[in-house]
Image (cartoon, rainbow, N blue to C red; front, side, top):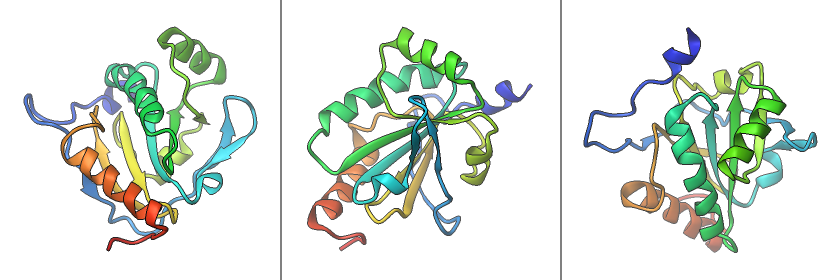
Length: 171
């Protein structure tokens, strides 16, 4: 079953997820339809650091992480930051019901055919990517994350400082 194959543990017990540099080349396109039925994607978020999060309602770690991402979004309000969550393979009604039950309000791009997930190299869930303010993917991480601590928080903060300086590259 595909669902079972995508829900692979991120790391051994006691280890956190590992942030890896993006080495797959150009940033894949990420445009589609949001839950509100309007166009959504990375293009409209240029100038901000974007955390792109691929998830599904059947994924238990995703269930835990989505509320934390909503809190992160609130915490970083006023900074050049956005979250674009991408639901992999599910329909609008199921996604809306799931988010309502979790009391989570995040922008969601629907990927019912899993084309975006394939283009981004998503092999398991949850999987996240950090995109800098110029629209370039800088890093990726597989598994449930705490973006407020350790190396993940440091990487996010570094990209936010770049964006706030108006730079798109490290410096």
